[in-house]
Image (cartoon, rainbow, N blue to C red; front, side):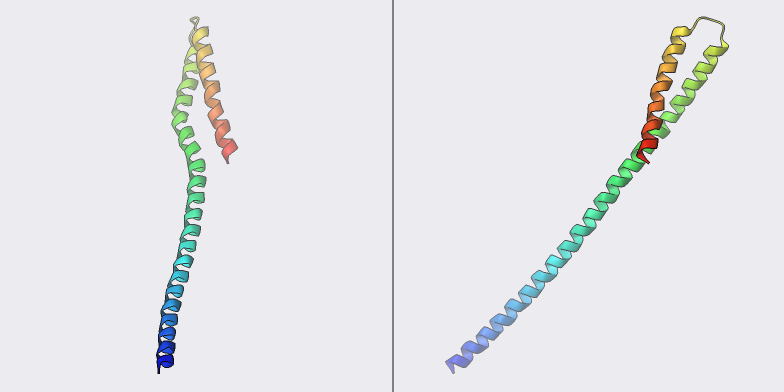
Length: 107
């Protein structure tokens, strides 16, 4: 009788342990899937940050470049000696061209 009782208790303990093991395996699989999804999201976010970060910079610099070009055109049309101003504006315009190089290099 004692042997039968011990056997039943062992089987019950085994069933409980098996259920806990199944639960733990499920949790591991879910955690692995979550980590893979997180990894994909982070990669996508980094890619978007590179792609759209430079685009935003260039779009904000575009009005500056337009103003510089208008300044040069106005100075060229004026008969006064504005060579120092023209040189400064040309240097600034050259610098703004670097942003375009960054954008075309990031594509």
